[in-house]
Image (cartoon, rainbow, N blue to C red; front, side, top):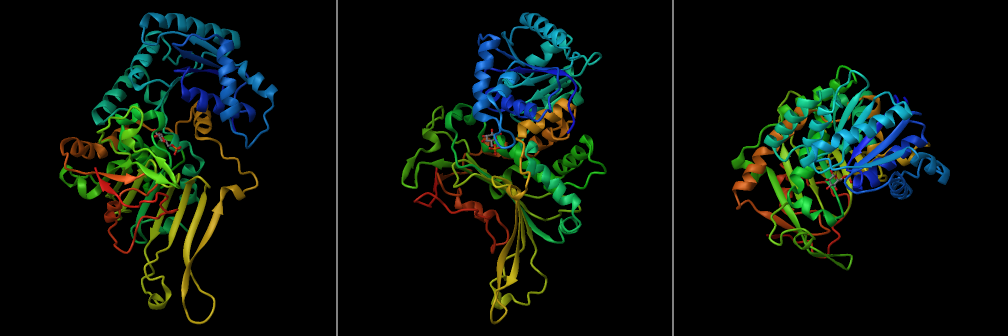
Length: 511
Ligand code: BG6
């Protein structure tokens, strides 16, 4: 693994949760693996007044709680040595006049630590700051790469819809070049998401089958067992379509659907993902109801404990129609996937947290054992488990021992946890390290983001204009509205349910 050049990681919004829970612990994990350069610092920025010492204490707590404990036994000394690399500067990032003071602090740190004028700016701020900060950085000459690299990491959401995404991209590109911009989609940083590419393109056995001739349909699920918690305010303006589908799930579909790139380079891979996004068959506004189901969790009892409905959550409108669940069907109109349905679903307060891709293969053309076996409608499945219990599962039919020719479905199962060296770096660890190295392969490119927004646009429009499109209530702890099953074209098939409903009442009601 390469060690990046000396640099300073500047975090805007450093007094927020993301810095404390994800970013600093991830950099600490890199530090423990000797993957940060000798001359390195994190400069945290925020409005909250804090000294370097205060910031170090706060970050130390975050590291103790959230850094990975799997690959190293960090000692208190390690943490103390690491936090010496952390600095803090309080300023109001909305005020143009305050950037000169910040620049002075940054450059004096750079001179002291000999970090070569190499800076990564991480925007861990509300999206309203995404144009203000880069513009002010550029005015101070801090986007200029003549002397040292200048990279900008932007957190999602990248816009709120197609128009705002386009205008955000336009604004960013006024001050930074596309190759300086790193749009984080943390799903791409997950080890097993990257493994999708390796599984597909390094094995002779999968790729020949990976097309319309052998695949009946593709299913992608990303379920969460928690609700919106204290993020109700944010979620009200977002909903599952923006929060999960437009970015994480469509990217997963992109990786499943893409052609092999000529070379594994940043643009090699991203060009292929972009082609998939451009090939998504548009869903007409008037047909949205036939392709997309939205739902919202209602109060329920899970394992005997009463749980709140979404409308009772803090920061949520008691009459909210924001969706906490989306299931949809779509097609990729190209030679490989013509007429193969892709089904994706995501939701909060479902029975378990699981993200998986399931490739459903067509059944054998001649069903010798069809009548006796119970395999009649069971197709082979390849389950790529992204999280938790990361791994691969192949389901196939085998003869049931004994008389006759009955068959049963059995599993060939690989778990990452079985590997001797099973350390899976966190998504942020991987992505931050890549950015430090200047590798944007696992970051979203502007055109890919826009194409994904373009695809969801008619859904957003239909939901906005047509109140008759139902928001189906589903009891927390169930797999969402039953009507989602109607999306599946082959009526002998259902979604894959990795575990049963947990709620006592499995019915759904309409809001
Ligand atoms: C985030 C969403 O992008 O992804 C959250 O904003 C969601 O609402 C989270 O909970 C899920 O990520 P993961 O890694 O837990 O699957």
